[in-house]
Image 1 (spheres, rainbow, N blue to C red):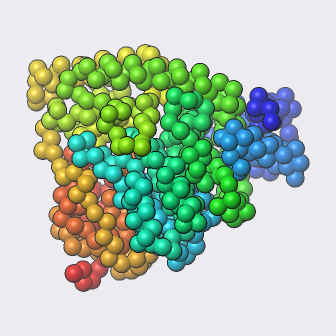
Image 2: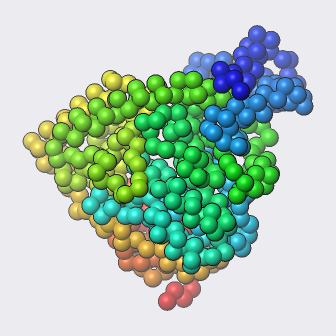
Image 3: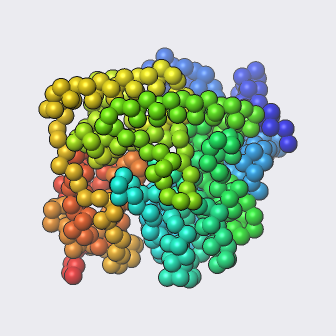
Length: 489
């Protein structure tokens, strides 16, 4: 196929020259009516592009097959047999793929460091979840990927599992040994699904880690908006081979995708695919040059440390565009440093936690951005050295390695049954009845049905007090947690 073509972009451009007279949705009629102040803030052109796929981007029956052709081009670009564009983010993409492999009462294996998207769908769909332990680097206090022996042991424990889901790369840019994991899954006759939200560009540049599909994965999900240049919520589902039922995947996609998808998001995915298919190698080599420069220069700012190739497990690869910085040598939290950098230098980090900050170097990152980050970090260290009271000292907290997953009852039972609110400090021994997922990275530390240990209590209190953002808690004050009402021992 001609990767120079971008059917959705071309169809959208045609509307610019001959706009239809519309008597349906959207009601703003390509910007003829716009909410107050948005004309000056966003401009009419954005609204002109906000049309529907039928009777707008295409004809009534989508006879020009613009979206279908865009999917086929993307499948070829990602070396896949199946591709769909998704406008509800990779959360929706993951829900779609999970619906294609398991139904109520069936078991699916999910890596312990999976995003809340996987756990929320399992709760909503009534899936049984087997948690696959991940490798924890205690020196860095971060979670890496799934080791082959861990997946093998989990399959022995859950022999009826319908699929396994792993995260590769992690939020920190470290991959799992996908080839080994895929072989293990295929030996059991089940598909390996990879949440590769941060790895969509991997097939287009040899200097980036290997793409999951080329390593044997059966399906992968990419957040093209995270680093590749697509609009927010732009996600891509790809699948390869016959282990995963593609007809069922197609039906699941139709089940979850809106009948009125955002055409600007779809067009941005189409354009992103074209750019990467034609120029991805050079584009990402340029990004990698910036990232390597940033790594080297930030690594010279003592006592900061930058995660490198020597710090990752055997069989893993590192995405150098994710610059993870250990700030524990300063004795303050990453949350406080994140806030200080934003207040003093207008720098927004990709992630912060109790002992790290993360810089994501992507297509939109400039040399000026890198210099600004370097200056901001150097300024922080210099000013903090001169005045140790500049930021509050961090007492530190328990390692993520202390957090276990002990499911006392089913998630649906905990979510739907009687519940009460208890203080974090009094939660030990109770059963969680809500999900607690500090964000980013949005990895649940407690899910409904999970026994709350003393380590959970200590970890949550330490991170909350240090400044963690808990995503969508029942109690926005983060003082209490929803737990199952009744006997807990």
